[in-house]
Length: 296
Length: 292
Picture 1: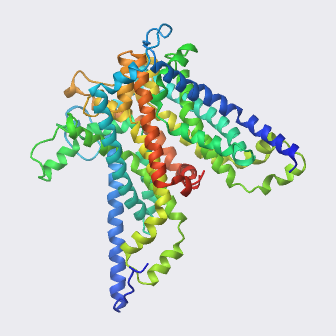
Picture 2 (picture 1 turned 30 degrees about the horizontal axis):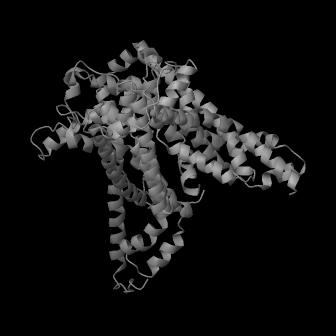
């Protein structure tokens, strides 16, 4: 292609990208810059025009707030445990659905149901199923004789965190299953057949063939899910509002911003969230070498 | 590889192997059954609970009572129906804009070679995964400045933050899957890029647009944080916020029957669409992540 034609192509490319660039500047870059800018001011939500520069005071206020660190700890616990459980469960279900067994097609469709249900609705359903007096789970456990009276699952403390993790695992395992299944289907079955003919036991086939070949697929899924879990807001908000035992960094930032109307401090908190999530993303990408494995 | 030892399994009768295989299949089917109970029971239970009245609700009979009083109450509840209309409006408009913007960008990213292509893709991916709360105050100012606060239209604009990068990314993957030969003749004939996109690729992209559109619709339909923050009054709420904010007088008087009826109502259309377009949705969800 001649130089002139190439240049015409570049121009055409940017023409096609114009709507994207415009929208991303309007709803992503600009609000992000303004949020960071507000972090350095003492602005309040009811009057966005009068404020003065306060330097790093807001950032310091956030990290000297005990509640912020509780929120960071909750978010970390929630993200790490739920993503770990989802990965293991997702891998197990994906391996199962990859087998040629009757009913596999229906199961593959059924697995999409929890994924399609809005988080708010899932939260409400689990809240109802785990209700201390009338919840079906307590009922089942009592009838099985495992407990003798209903447990107040959603009352607070670490039990409440357990409930959130449990509900999150239920909602997001389908995503893991789908990504891992897609990864499984990229692996040629000849490798397994060869291994089977050689008499290599099943668990060893899994450890030495399946798992290494699935690494890129699992890595991408873990990255997406981890970043999603770190920004979790709706699940905890619907079940527990601003209950400290499950408050996440997103809830903390929104509380400061909207409920307490402290735009400056709230923005500083959300900037911390931004840095936190960015750091985690860089670490995960580095550890998994995803840039090499998956490419872009 | 040295750790793998080659041991010849002792020879056994064919019936032993047949039995073993059958046992294996039976175990797998049992596991499959458990998986289906796990994934489907909560929604089933929501439906069962929504058809029980009064004291029935608190007795855990496993079969639905088929009493649709709560559903009739919902239909008569103008606030709830209003939020349903808002949700449909917001989700449809968001899907439409995200598809148009995403398709245009995907053509450039998938079909035209230009030096900054990888950088643009990377930025798009980064935006799609960063937390919404990070832009909350800047978005609040933007919405106020545009005079959109407490209007459903504000949500369309804010939802583009997560849906546009998503549709761009997935449609780019889909466009790359079409063979280049499709347009080569057109390029030689001096056809413009715009005509290649609209006359050659677009007619072939129905299925890709459908699956991407469904995913964007679900994203918009389920969004909570922006909807909660940028609408104030009941008549401007979307469904997730409306359901999220239903509350009883106290913890023990929670209107669980009504909440379950509302939950089933707003979820059923989604589930039906998802089940119908199952294959396409899976293709869309995995296209971006695995091959991306």
